[in-house]
Amino acid sequence: MQSVSENPAAITVTELNRRARALLEDGMARVWVVGELSNLARPASGHLYFSLKDDSAQIRCAYFLQRQRGPTTDRSTGSRSGFRDGDRMLAFGRISIYEARGDYQLIVEQLEPAGEGALRRQFEVLKKKLSDEGLFDPARKKALPALPARIGVITSPSGAAIRDILSVLRRRFPGIPVLIYPAAVQGEAAAPELRAALATAVRRNECDVLIISRGGGSLEDLWAFNDEKLARAIAECPIPVVSAVGHEVDFTICDFVADLRAPTPSGAAEIVVPDQAEWRRNFALLARRNAVSMRRHLQDRFQRLDWLSRHLMQCSPAAILARQKDWLRNMRQLLLAAMRHDVGTRVQVLGKLQSRLLHQSPALNVQRQLQRLANNQQRLSTAAAKVVDQSAHRLKLAARGLHTVSPLATLDRGYAIVTDRKSGRILSNAASVAVGDAIEARLATGSIAATVTGKSGE
Image (cartoon, rainbow, N blue to C red; front, side):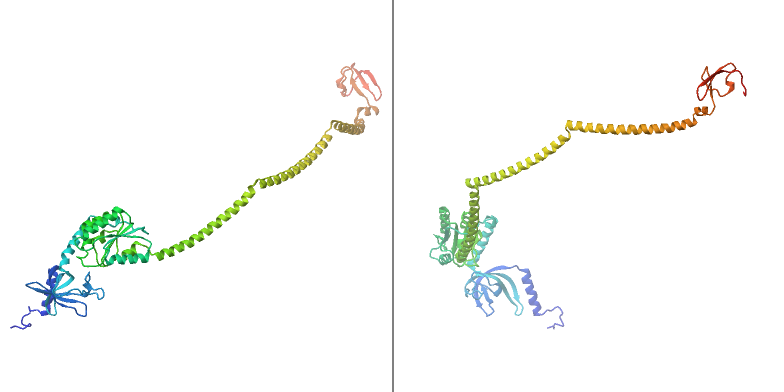
């Protein structure tokens, strides 16, 4: 036998188990395995270890705590407690190897009784079919009434579900009447009876909301609520429907097709009616608001009434007459004052006009003109006399000056002015006359006629 150092191709057991595990996990998809439960072990960790076997073989299985979810889980411990050796089970998981011991095993991800497996696959097929048809579409779901006038419950009248629903309704809003449409909720007759009860509720149309409900149970127990005809009847129901089937972890086709799903029957009762205590608080608040609003409204009305009363008093005939009398009295005083002012103004204007008329009278004007004429005549006489005096004085001065330069004055000194008697021309040159011409000599006093007898000095 060669040692490891002599055969380099040899691998360790750990590596062998690791490779085998990788081959199994990567090369084989997750599978469903059916078999009989045996060698069930429940350690303190909460994991489940067991074997699944048939007549010819068996396989080790590990079901870890974090995967243990479903309707058969113990809600107090979180682990599945309803399994026993010898139960026929359906396990879903992946193939692996526990490397430390080299054990070939199935790592379980979902575990359920074998009878439920076929039902669950049937459930998934129907769910997909109805979903594809749009029966689960949120847009087609109807809203619940805020305060229904009457509530209908489709369930078994002797089950725990109806007791829970009635208890919650009495506590939350006892004034709303409840009608029970009895139907079986388990077994072969359950689905037809549920459909008949729903049809009765729709035909009678006496409720504002319907609750279809039952308590918890296995998949087989709840199977009536996965009926396709019932699901379609709920989808076509004109009344809002609340589905409350089983516990919170349980889901049925009714839950998806109903207008609203409640986790439990009690939860459905909580949903369909409001809390009366909250409503009372709201009513009290509304009452207080209404009282405040009413007081304000009354105050406004009282103020309006007071204003109208005063306005009515002001609009009464007596008040109108009194106001008209005051107005007439004021108008009379204003008119008298205006007349007095107008008369005074006219008197002043008349006085001014009389004064102007007197100043512009023809007699007065003639008198003034005569006075002006007399004044002008006097001034003219004075001025004329003054002008005559001044003219006489100036004439006297001029005469004196003229006399000074006058030829006559020269004549007084013995000179004479000789003129041609024929032409009257003054002779100043002897050459201008001829001998024998008649001449005249003017003296200071008188004149002398002569004839030229001779000339000298030419």
